[in-house]
Length: 317
Image 1 (cartoon, rainbow, N blue to C red):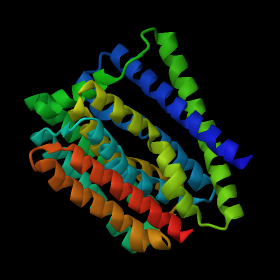
Image 2 (cartoon, helix red, strand yellow):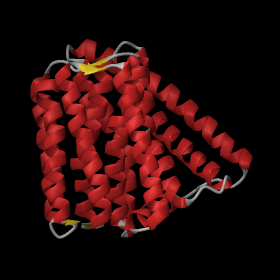
Image 3 (cartoon, helix red, strand yellow):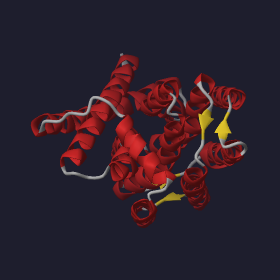
Image 4 (tube, rainbow, N blue to C red):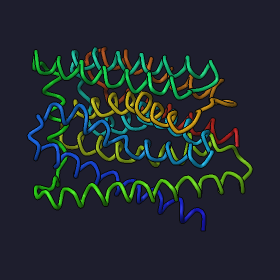
């Protein structure tokens, strides 16, 4: 029964996230917000909404290990599984200016998280600092996009325009947002409760559940978006989605979670998993800047790396 609740929770998270994202884009467009700003802000928050709600729910349920595992596992999945799957479908092109800016911020955020892990965890004041850093980055990016309207700005516009099925009517927009957040809240509650129960029944740590089942489940929207973008030939959007999602997962998701309670780093998350996340980010940068593309062969290597990682986690069970 708990497995059924877990699957149902994941399904509600995915559907809720999609409805909330489309509703938010529809609302932003009705307010005449520019596509570049939508791509930079609404899309970033929207694609990370499942991770955000699960993290808050896990903290409130006194299951912070799931929250930390979810964020770190999601970033590992984004960097290896999601980009790897997209590149296997079609080599992913990387815009140099976009990669330099967003890729650098992703690396700095990843380094910050590892440093916080070494201190023992994330507390409320650090969460506020992380959210302030995210807001500052977004504001600076907005000013850069507005001032120069370079390739990065155009990429943010493409990201916002890629999403289909956006409601036009104000009432439909509100319905999408309400239903979306209701699905996110109920799905997160089911997911966290069932994950905790399964971990206790199987005698495994909650962090392992967070790193694997929960992280993979909350990353499914990014996986679907990347596969669709690669299939349509919009490969630069796939790169932008992953870089943006990784930044939001660290600064936005964990920063918000820390406001609801401390997020301690325990066990092998400190000694193993956070360093795997950092290693994946370090390896990704030279892959992107050599030829400014991720080839099918490199995509296959990323997929193999994720399979090896999941295998190593399984050995710990």
